[in-house]
Image 1 (cartoon, rainbow, N blue to C red):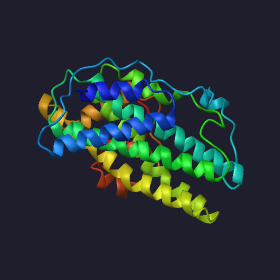
Image 2: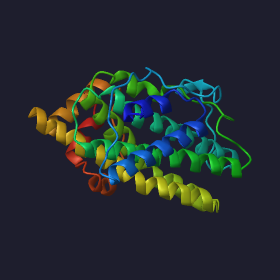
Image 3: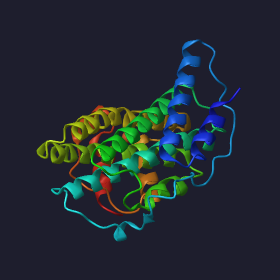
Image 4: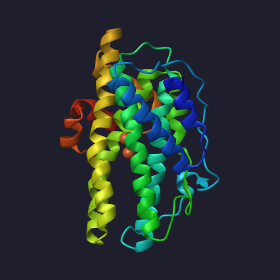
Length: 269
Ligand SMILES: [Fe+2]
Ligand SMILES: [Fe+2]
């Protein structure tokens, strides 16, 4: 029988995006079914690769070398969908990576439930973005993409709390800030399927940020750390640069991130 860590490593070492997300969704369903039956799958142990397997395309470029396109044009909207697809594919791997990476840290079963559910949703998000691209006559891999997306994972490879602070509580929270603006762009263009896909992503990402906040606070409690101080220390250690307002205060609050967590980080120091 496969353990949860075996499943995670299988997803991480699968290169093709659609094949990766198909495995991810199948394993998430197996995990949920076993949990519902009262006979959960073992967590196990595993050796996740430092970098997940990726398809030959898209070409990965440094952020400054990725061409900028006007979001008002059809090509600009395709570039935006492509960029979101790339973020979602990285999110699939980020969610599976954390399970074997930190399997030596004993965690309640609810932690794995949350992470597997979020991995399943990220897989759905990638597929939705690919469907939208294909509807527009493009596909994931047609344009270059940012090379730096796995950086946060590598920087926090030995720091579980650092990973939670930077990935769900900074990067995914940033998604809550910028997604309404993206939805407005596609609404203006009358691109209904892209609007529907982005609205699904927007609503589900709130819970991903909330999972990050919940388990970060859990670990702070275990180690008797003040959560706000620990968050500031870890973000300053692992995240380069300052956080950028405007913030989506309402959705961040819904996800359990109060303003005094992020406002002090708008200044580097
Ligand atoms: Fe997502
Ligand atoms: Fe997410």
